[in-house]
Image 1 (cartoon, rainbow, N blue to C red):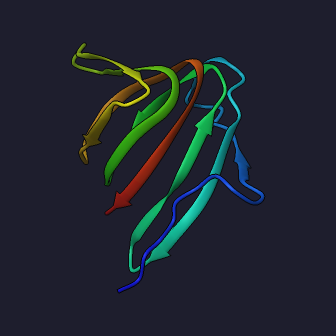
Image 2: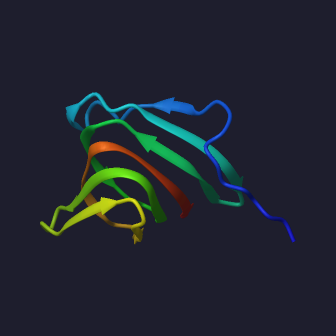
Image 3: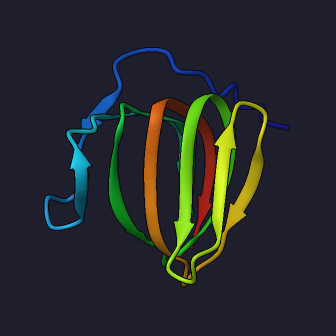
Length: 111
């Protein structure tokens, strides 16, 4: 059996939302990838404050480790996210992700 320790160590990948999807702020994303195998991705992601549009084509399990964000579906459904929250975003979800306070999450993505 192979165990994977998911932790925010080493040098992260640095990114930002696509400028066409940016709504407010200048959020900086840091990603520490722990697994990239057969279409499964896992790691730790962090973002500084800002808001951008999201469109999901894949399944993503998220566990919020720190911070405060608001995920709002195009249908108007609002999800306030804080440390300890765990949830799944399904393919076809679209809306906005707003980071109120720098947010860090563990994630697992599968197409």
